[in-house]
Length: 177
Image (cartoon, rainbow, N blue to C red; front, top):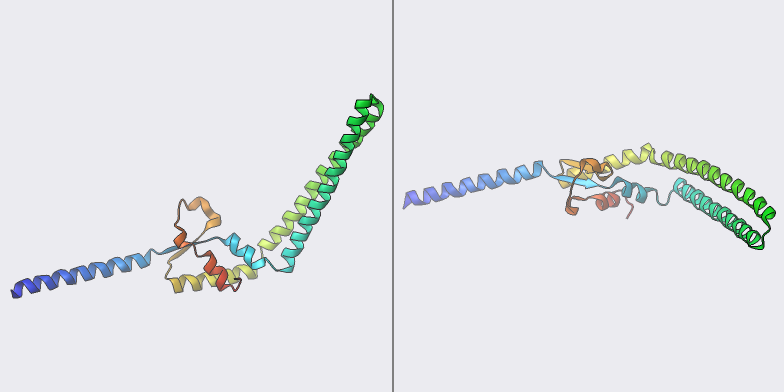
């Protein structure tokens, strides 16, 4: 009977050792993902440079809408002259349409370059990234993560469970929620 209890204790001890080793192994390989674009957007949502960028983008859109409306008005005039058989006036309007179309294309290209430059300068904000990496380190250490992957580098991430997405936790730690 004593041998039976000894074997039983040995089996329980082995099971305890295996479960402890298994749980230790799980802690070593704990991963998380973070959507840095979402964090970035939350961080800069109310900043003056982002508001400036958004205002310029909206201003650009309004101007393009105005220019396209003018182009449509000219096109309507051309169609009306053609319908009336006034080919001379229709050709004059066609020249204006071509000139305005070229201007719109050049304007759009210039404004897109300007907006892209503003966006790039916002994304290269070093103080934000220092704060982000410090926050990621705190979240990783407190959550027991051995690695945090960036969802923006999605070519390296083939699949992940939403349970390992710590984006909202990082945004909260940055004081943005």
